[in-house]
Length: 572
Image (cartoon, rainbow, N blue to C red; front, side, top):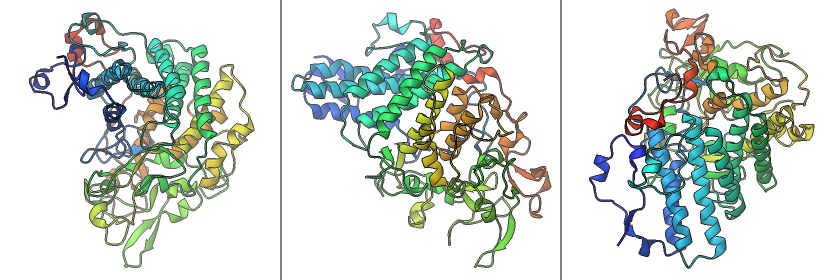
């Protein structure tokens, strides 16, 4: 009787060493004849994909929000350099991606074998498998570039696949689009926020297609990519816009408060949330809030990020009619403790800033507690993070690791608005449909209403001197909106810089403000050696220097030993 290990049969292509895994009996072993018999079994198998969405973390691990500090938004309390400086022997991103692609291919091969399934159910689960295959390929391609295309569940006899070379990343992404289109057409429109739904498929498609459309538009030979592909860019941007529009036509709406979706004990029924990761007190938890309210120094936002927030007149720092100072002032709390307040700075800025950081700045000699009775803490850049914190959770659950139980949003409406607006603006520049003021009014300007900002017009009305991306005023402002709305969320900023081909902006020798924080020039308690022109330096002399090769991670050396045909990315 043929046996299959449902969750983990590993091929030689994807692992430098499998002995420790293959020596052990499978924990989940079924016979084909008695497993692929009911829709319930299929659903149970497919639910394993849910764990690939890390959210705020899986119990003791870190998550995709806040912890990813290789950006210009954050400077962690320990120095963050490039993902890889040397070629690793293994890479979990490579390994885990192939595990999930195999899982999807197993599902695709076996759904047709379930004789009791109606056609609608068969199409739904086929759509789920193709959606998750597309998602995993998207993540592999954006990290490694060219990869093999595997559309079957391999075993060790499949030498033609095991020892094949990589396929052009554009061809892979064209296949990804085919999978996405099938998924959006066939996955059930069931309104679920915690399981596979048509809305989830459209949200994933919007993200992937916006990434691919802008990547193809902005890539250049100088960053070791191929020449721009404006035809392909147009196709993917049109698909991104259509996918976002499909969700905007549904009955989703923005939460009144910016923070609500980030710190709620339950996101069930939340009008802004499309898909979320659920946590449960004392059953399944995370540690994100503990890192924001315990003795561990917080990874604060940078001066570069702080300066990106508009003032209430809708203008940037260099053009605003408001006082543009960033200097805190000394105030005394009710308990008699003195602290450096930035309440006056936050009062004239985009409301998302006050929903993201504390109203006081801190450093190692000037620690603060966010709420009464909290452990004293400080931030690496002075700007502490409160975006994900919830004062209503008891302290024993807030400031203790593996005890936090707020739900994590994974796809939500404000991202969809930003994707639609950016796709519309970028389309016009590659020969697509012209963007209209209506496009802005039903997306960006709804976010600005919540942020307390003046509306964005298509002609913008000003040119920000800080625009160093070489793009139009409109696209620069749309990128600003994305940055401020999604700061520290889901590692979004890093991949935005990749797809816009702006990764050099993380070079601290050229852009030192990406490692600087708050203005402490008047604080006598801080060591002047830790200041650069009055601003606290998160890393006291460490630097991060850009190299073009960092646009792609290196292929793990263990894979090349197994299959020389797979090759290495240029520059590594």
